[in-house]
Image (tube, rainbow, N blue to C red; front, side, top):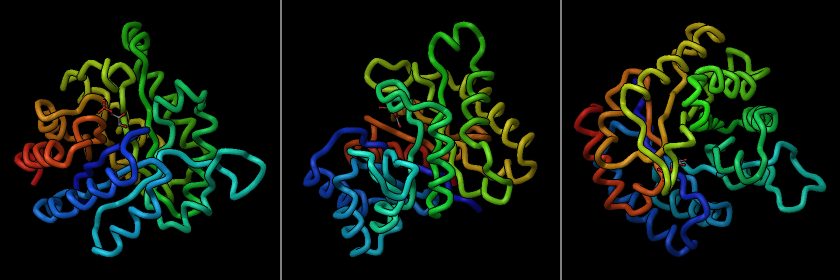
Amino acid sequence: MKKFLLGTNWKMNKTLAQGLAYSEALMAIIGKYAQFEFFIIPPYTHLWKMKEALAAQKSPLKLGAQNMHEQDFGQFTGEISPLMLAEIGVDIIELGHSERRQYFNETDEAVNKKALAALKHGFTPLICIGEQQADKDYGVSPEMLAKQLKIALTDVPATAIGQFWIAYEPVWAIGVGGTPAATPYVEEIHNFLRQVLIDRYGPSGQAVPLLFGGSVNINNASDYARLDNVDGLFIGRSAWEPDLFEAIMAAVGAVVK
Ligand code: 13P
C-alpha cells in the first residue's frame, strides 16, 4: 500500500545551518512513523549539503527543489536546470506553487513544460494548483482547477501519470494571511480532482497521490488526512520546527495507519 505523504515547503526560509539542524532532528523523529513518506523542499542552496546529510544516514526522507527550468542548459541567468538537480540526486521537483505564479508570473503552460522536463529526467513532479478567493466566490473553483491541472499535464501519457504528485493548495488558504479551508470543501475539491484524473487517465488516475496544502496545522491536519482522496499533506509554517511537525505526525498518525 502507498504511504501517506507528509512534507514541508520551506519557501525562502532557513539558512543552511538551520536547515541542516532541522533535517538532523527530523531524521531522528521519522523512524517512529512507518506509515508516512516524508519529504522536505528547501531552497536550492541547501540541496547538496542536505543530500549528503541524508545519504550519510541512509535516510528515507525525500528531497525536493522548489522550481526548475525546463532546459538542460543555456542562456538563462539565474535559473537551475534538470541536469544540475539530477546530479545532486534530488527526488522531487515542486512546480507551479501559487507564490511562483503570483510573484514570478509562472503560467500553466510554463508548468507543463517544466513538468515534462522533470518527467524526462526521472524526477517526481509535484504539481501545485489552487484557485483564488475570487474564483471561489464566483463558484468557479472546479473549472479553474481543472484548467490548471489539464494544462499542467498536457502530453503526459497514462504510462507516466503514476510518477506525478498533485498538490491542491487554495491560494486563499496559504501563508500568514491565509484562512484554513473547511474540511467538507477540501473533500469536495479532492473528489472532483480525482474524477478529473480518472476521466483523463482511467485507473491510472486513481493512483495519483493528491496532497492538500494551505494553513495545514495541528488543529486541522487529521481532519484533512481522514478524507478518502487526500493522500498527503503539504505543509508550510506549521512544519518549520521539528517538534511542531512531529505533533502533526502524531495527530495524523492517529487516523492514518
Ligand atoms: P502554509 O502551510 O504556511 O500555509 O504554506 C503551505 C504551502 O504553501 C505549501 O506549499
